[in-house]
Image 1: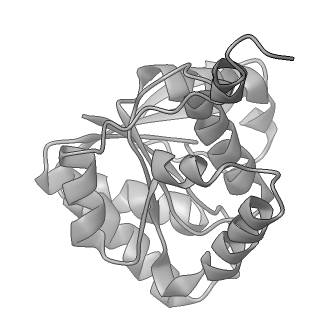
Image 2: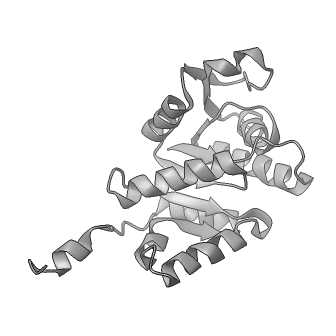
Length: 195
């Protein structure tokens, strides 16, 4: 599988996250998967890339051309250059068979919410897993539950991705994903023609 990993490029994070990223890259290589990522050499992004390449795996980095003037690119992989961030995300989404979100900042969150929104709208049926290292996303999922409780989001949306702090369970899910489908606009059918 081509597995897209969304994660941090920050260099100020605890080393335990870096270790987890390198281990994820190693596991991708051992499983014969190809990493699809944002082509960054720093933070978790670089850690996952190092992990897969040091263990004989392949990686495809997708990065906008405007990063050419800063030294942030992980070059030991196939590189695809884009004109915009939107094009970057589109290519990463298109060439990937599944997605893993590791800890990250606003960029990672934006990528995650876009890919799960596209699944919610029926634009793809690819598996999405959240690898919750150190319980990083615990409060985020508390907030998402609050959104469900307040009626802004259906509880069915939670079934569109898998959430675990166990790397073995993450890979097992990607291998055997839940094929649950969700229709965001099923409430229109429930009206049965009544307005």
